[in-house]
Every structure is written in C-alpha cells, then in structure tokens.
Length: 452
Ligand code: TYD
Ligand code: MG
Image 1: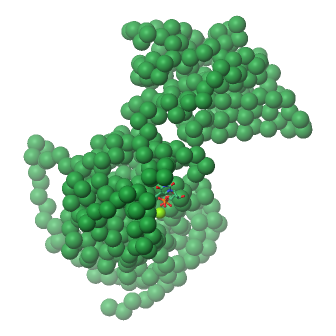
Image 2: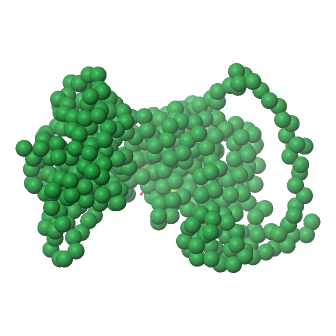
Image 3: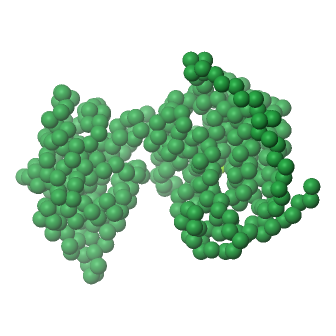
C-alpha cells in the first residue's frame, strides 16, 4: 500500500483538521491553536470489526466488580475513588516540578511491594535521574522496572513481556507511534499513542497511569481528546512556592469527581496531610478581614480561611485582585454589597486571597467572602471561631446550600463554636452540632451580626 503524505493544519486542542491555517478553531473555539502537521492520506483497508471481536452479552448479575489496588497512599486512594481500578487509564496533569513524577514513583514502590511488578517508563528523565530521585525517597525494590523509551510500540512490547500490574508513562507528550508521521507531542501523536495504551489497559487488565504536561492556561497540553479518552483525570493544584499540593479529580468513571487529596512536599517526597482543614487555617488570628468558611470538596468538608484587604485607592482606578476565588463572582458580590448592603466600596482597592493555595469554586463561600470584605473595610474582626457559609443572590438574599450538616460537623471537629448559615438551612437542620448557630436570610442580617 503506497502511503501518501499530506500537509494539513490541526487544532492542538481538539484535533480538528483544516486545509488552511485559521486563527480560531471552528470546532472547539480555541484561539491560535492550529499547527501544521503531516498526516497520511490513505484509505487503509480497515478490518471489519465483527471479525475481530465476537460480541457476547452477559447478565447484569454476572458482571463482576473490578478489583482495586490500594496505592498505599490514602489521599491518592480517595481521589481515585477507593484505589486504582484494574485496567483503567488514569491521567495526571500538573505544572512542571509540582511533584507528578515523585508521586508516581512513591506509588510504584507501594504497589510493587503489595501486588507485583510495576513498569515505569520515562521519556523525560534518564535512568540515573530516576535512581537519584528514588534514593532521595528511600525507595529500593526489585519489582520496579525502569524503561527509558519513547516509542509506544516498543513500550507495549516490553509491557506484554513483563506483565506488570501497573504501567506508568512519564509523560504522554514524549511518547510517539511509528504509525503517525507528525512530531511527538502533537495532537495526532497523543491521540494515537493514548489509544494504543488504552487498548493495552483494557485487554490486559493493567492499570495505566499517564503523566501529562499542562499549558500556561492550566489545561493538559495538547488535546482535549485525551481527557475524553481516559477513565480518570487528576490535576495537581497549588503553587510551587507553597509546600502544599492539592490533587483533584476532575473526571472519574470510578468515583466521585472534585475529590481532593492534600499533600506536603518534604525532603522525603510527598507526605499525606491527614487533616487538611488545619493547614488552611493554621495561622488564623483574630484580625480584621479574615473569615472562615467550609467548602465541600468531593465527599468531605474542608475549612478554609478567606482573607480580604480593603484599602483606599491611591491612583484613580481601584485595584481588584483575587486569588483562589472566581474573579467575576467576587465582583458580583462587591456590587451586591454596595447596592443592597449600602457599603460604599467605590474608592477602595480590594484584595481577596484563599489561604493555603486552595481554589474555591463553590458559591457557598459567598457569605464568607462578603464577611471578610466588610470586616476589612470597617476594620472590625469577625466573631472568633465562627464558620460562615451561604450563597448570596443578586437581591442580597442568602440562599440555602447543600450538605450543611457535613460542614457543621467539620467545623465543630476543628474547634469552631459558632456558625452563621443561611436561614433556609437553619430551619431544616435537626441538631446544633454543639455550635451556636445563627441563620441569616439576607446580607443585611449578616451585617447586623458582624458589625454590632
Ligand atoms: P517532580 O516529581 O520531578 O515534578 P514533575 O514530575 O511534576 O515535574 O518534582 C520535583 C520537585 O519536587 C523538585 O522541585 C524537587 C522537589 N522534591 C522535593 O522537594 N523532595 C523530594 O523528595 C523530591 C523527590 C522532590
Ligand atoms: Mg516529571
């Protein structure tokens, strides 16, 4: 069969192919994502699917639940939904240097001790570099097999021979397949290699971890196709400046999403943080502009501190700078506070920060953001040991939120003695969880409590 090569432009985000360069992808809307690639223009005789697999139906009762391996790291097991599922394909993304390779090397060690061989393929680092890291981590095991290789066909050949329980590919952007002609890291290559690894995982029952690089915008570099293909997508969050790392599941076919695991980077690698609420609150003092809220991350509640600083604007335009909270959401809350709460913030610079590097996306933190801003503006500390949560609407009303009990329980466990919550929740909770609970139905009621 003669192979004809063709030059096309392909969107590096979704894989859309266009004969000409375009500034914006008509399919996924990404800007400036087209790169020239070479593809094979063949009409390869496809094997008829029905000849390859024999369809067999099976009754629901007979379907066995997949086995799970424990990674030996409880925080990682939780994020995965209770351990690694056999035959699953897991993608771990994160900024360079955040600890992806470290976490997977530690995981390899635990798995190799409890379950058998682990094949760690590195296309990024040499074997000596991996060995050095392993020494730092105090890891030595005959059952961890290293392979420095980037051609996926050879990786799979090696994996078929070794039959590991888990295969780790560090990173998906460095591996390539002979069957596609474009450069490693391009959308075609990533899709093809990931598909091959996926087939391997599904046919052999080997769990496969893929490490993925992240672009400046924070998405896994290259294709969104990769996220569709894999079973589980985990992201490392957190600043390299902080010692804390947050691993979040954004997609999981085997467990809840948005579950987080909290780690600390130490000289012995990543260690688990068993009580994350404590680290996000650790330096809390009774100063103005600091509010404690409880957010739900996956299946558990975590207490976090939101800090605000409101200061008179020095040069014309007020500055608004928010870290860890949604920019538009906070601007909306400021507008509600001005209009409904009659707090005049027009000539003020406002800064909001979530302590510890957590990113809060839940509207349940609205009430705490408002409290922190007002507290800083008026320079009055909020009541001590008080947890505040609730969603705020455009007319200044405070709306009920989900799972108040879980949040209150966590608040009590961490040592809070008071809670300010939506009236709608207050009326329905059955007990007081050893807290002095106040229900508010509007931000004016909140202001009365915190400014009196
Ligand atoms: P690494 O796992 O190489 O990151 P990634 O694979 O995501 O790029 O993490 C490397 C960083 O972690 C590096 O800055 C050094 C630091 N580190 C420690 O602080 N302690 C350790 O025990 C190890 C192995 C790394
Ligand atoms: Mg790495």
